[in-house]
Length: 308
Image (tube, helix red, strand yellow):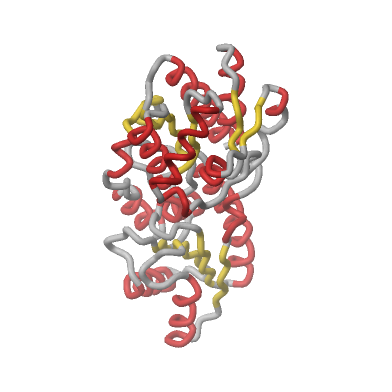
């Protein structure tokens, strides 16, 4: 997100447009917590994780009267447009501000779940994926040395994008995630048994935290009770949400940040940016209410083949 902030500020400066940073998202709009941002404010933030503007949930934004006052505050301050970085909730809030009060808004997709309609990529996904893979590569060393089964839980309450891609990249023996049509506890056991019969003495199973089986800890309890297995559980948790962003996240954040300002300056009013077939695209905010993308069935099939 910092790459996107930096690029938006510097593109605006190139167009002689003043920029304010709104702190803590929509909560900052409600409280008028915004301050000028200059190119110097954005020095040395490209490599930092998180966001220099901070973030917060804002339940008050659901109230029409709150949005009305925030819109008037923006107009009184001479603000002409907003760039909003976030996911489904953030874009829905921006869409309401535009439709109800005519404030032009541009969205930059920022969610590690990579589950927004219309785009193949979101900020944070590549960094979270690489963080998970690096962690599991280290766990694999211990699993192999001790001939042990590890269940590794990754983020993804309602999306298996991180889980499936991590499983492919780290050579996991199995993967469980919410949208999977083929996997479940029984299928997992069959897959593990097949590996044991082929001589495998260690295994890595990647589990999305939102999987219908209940997550890595619940699965481990069943496996221990039914098969007396020597296994370990590792929940990667919030380490996936931090750290220095990858080059891809920095590059796309920079492109989307600059493009959002250029399109707003050209008169575009209600859109979010994305990536389709490797090309930067603009998508109407209305598309955010469409079906979210699911993990690739081809990748799911490949994961099963590679686990042999």
